[in-house]
Length: 411
Ligand code: MLT
Image 1 (tube, helix red, strand yellow):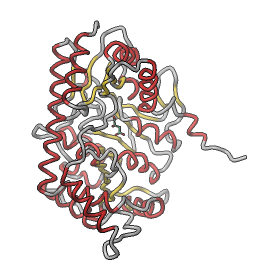
Image 2: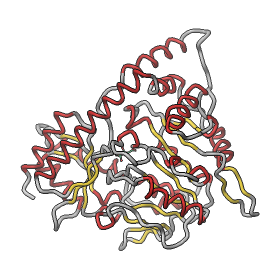
Image 3: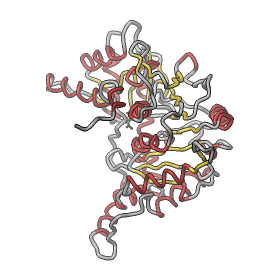
Image 4: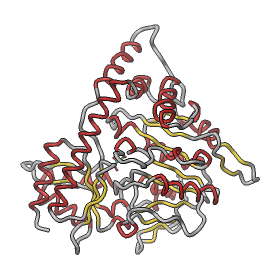
């Protein structure tokens, strides 16, 4: 008999978005005549832009010709893409990131989940709450969370940092010393941001406490306001303390193509038990070579095309389209009397639900009475209770229709 990884038994229910998908499938099966509009999971609806399609078509042709065929690629990503990233996502913002500090991957979800491999089980982890569930679940799987407290709905060894209206969605620095800090800005799920001064406090804390920030910047392409950092490396000293995750999923609609990257600067070090400082870049490289064979060549060519002139223009148009949807949702909900957050630098709108309901009850009501799918706040953690998330990723027509239906709901 083989024994299982008991840590998995500490996980709560099923993964949030699978639970929602199951509920929606059941509702659709029972109500085949109803048109359900999904503003739940942050999945895009606009097709891949022509610049990326052209690049993939060319890459497909290459793969079919003897001289262009490629087998295993470099595990860390092809040089052409790493260079394009360093140049366009960093150098253009005055940030020096070396090509070999960038690791191309099949998306930020995997990177955020896999990064726990290179850290000791006993590190103290701080996580903003509500939060993208992957950060918590992967720490549970790794045995770093401690037991689940059913009453408080928290894991004993995790430090939760509330991101709520009462603190204007700016998490406070931990009162105790923590080793790993997950930050995601623009934030999933609240759609709120930190400005440069606010993010600097976190970098300073990490430097003082020798902690490491795991910074998820998957939504940076949606930033519209000045002084909101697109990368944590815009903050002085961040290269010594922060790992950054980026994704083409929301930026360029690659949710189905799968590509992202993680930046691990060479200046960032972890500690071995003997006191020796060890390069995290080296550890991650070692892990990557062992467990990953790289993103398909064709997809990496598509990602490279994101940075061409045509690619940039076409992607900007898509982002503006989604941001317009975000405005429609925000305005519509405000007109309907809801308290609404996010949606300005983010595709996510975070609303306060009517008093006296749980966020899952609101989910059921919305699905049943308006045939609209959203995401209950409590699915993102205990401080998400009382809130609800809608995404701007559906079509404009569906977004308008969904909001009209929500406006007609009896609160
Ligand atoms: C979300 O809806 O929070 C995201 O789309 C999930 C993901 O990126 O995995």
